[in-house]
Amino acid sequence: MKEKWLKALIVLGFTTNVFAAQEFKVELGLGVDYGGIGTQLHFPIEIENTEIYLATGLFYASTNGNQEFGIGAGVNYYLSPNGAFTFYYGTLNVDKYLTDNLQVKAEADYGASIGYKYYFNKPSKSGFSLGVNYNIYGGASYPFVSLGYRF
Image (cartoon, rainbow, N blue to C red; front, side):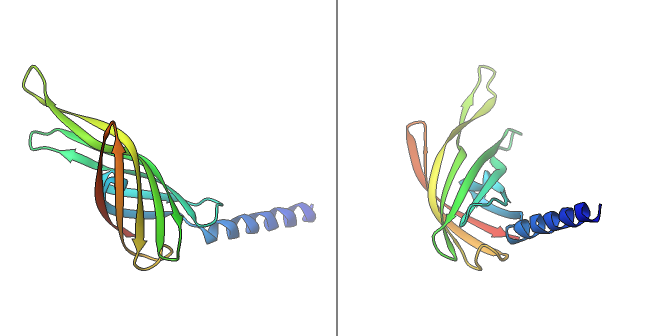
């Protein structure tokens, strides 16, 4: 019986150490890869120099109460201690139009974004990041800059 408890504690300790090296992280920011004005939730994975994240935020808002939320998922692959190649798929554009009742409606366009993000204090510490992205959706494209803060 003691042997089973000892094995269970060893496995539990090993599992805890694996996830201690890679922890859950949160970033707040402005940019396409933040879902507009929003957040990125980074999840620990076992692939070296790689992070995956989900993003959500307010992508479009108007004075008459219409709003569109951005959502997507991405990957950061670290090329250096401070810099990462980024790939994101999610909301990249919002088309606005008038209905027959003269109401403003908004529809989101989804696409892919590639870019580079620089972390001023390294990604393992809290601090600011600055990114540049090139976004492609439905036959259109545009460059964009993102600014964030990682906790």
